[in-house]
Length: 118
Image 1 (cartoon, rainbow, N blue to C red):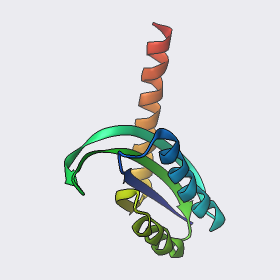
Image 2: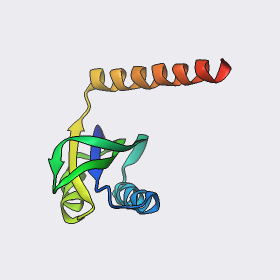
Image 3: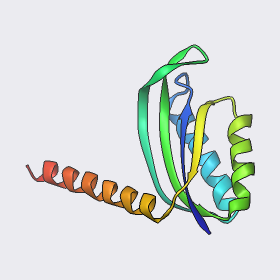
């Protein structure tokens, strides 16, 4: 099992419920193929660096998962078929990438906890 990270951008014309439904669709696809989702982050509505399909904002979402390599191509095909997805990028995570992602999450968690205490 390899570890992968996928970031995708959904069209901003979706409601929050429709965006969540789209994310659930991709999570179910992964789980149905034997993948385990390790981490996910909803980055929310953000401004795009450049317009895509005449849109300047989009819902960003990140998923880290462990899966066999042969499911990545069908997974990306699902992104291409869904008109709600503006862009996506899947990368294989090596051990350094995994360590960095975990340390980044821990720092963010510590920041949140110190803000809650203050």
